[in-house]
Image (cartoon, rainbow, N blue to C red; front, side):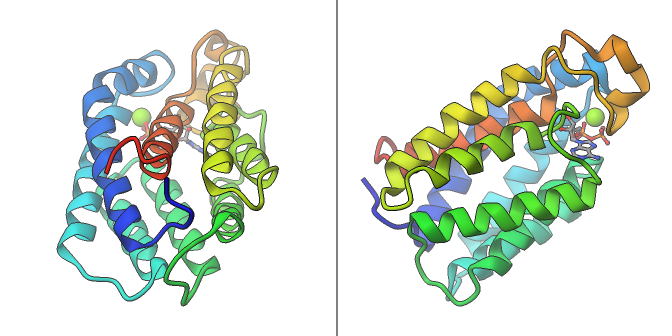
Length: 212
Ligand code: ADP
Ligand code: MG
């Protein structure tokens, strides 16, 4: 079990996240087909493959440099609305932990808070609008309830994100492409909330030591 997150953990996380997104890309695309334009799976698959490759190829003096590399890679490869959103998330998360070689539970919460803030600002979104923010925001809250225990915090974050993903189902979308559907967006899970859960699950698997 990792007590802190260093570059090695982050690289493993990206590798696992890439595998998870690739495996579930069709599912993400199906979710996007229902309320969007059926490209979220392909967008994320392309982006995570590039991000995993970029962090494996590079060497990073600090966690923030690595997170920023993930951000710039996602901005330039994912496309769609989610590329700049996820990209901003990682850029801002990195900015919040500048110079740190390893992240403990509190540093991770700081990174996540900055990421969520960046995401909300970039998307001009708030919770309850049926977006990825509805998974990230409860995840951050849950992480904060375990300030001294990274593994417990990340595990709680995954559960909260999964609940947040399910909670998008009855919501009316008011941001992004899904908002064009208005009331017809009700009854479908938001694809970005679903991909968020996959990313956090991969982090949990690494931090908990289930995968290395
Ligand atoms: P696009 O909508 O351009 O096709 P994707 O399909 O890759 O891009 O991503 C769609 C996801 O992006 C949505 O499911 C939602 O979670 C997220 N999203 C879209 N617009 C916003 C926004 N303004 N704020 C927050 N998240 C958003
Ligand atoms: Mg789409």
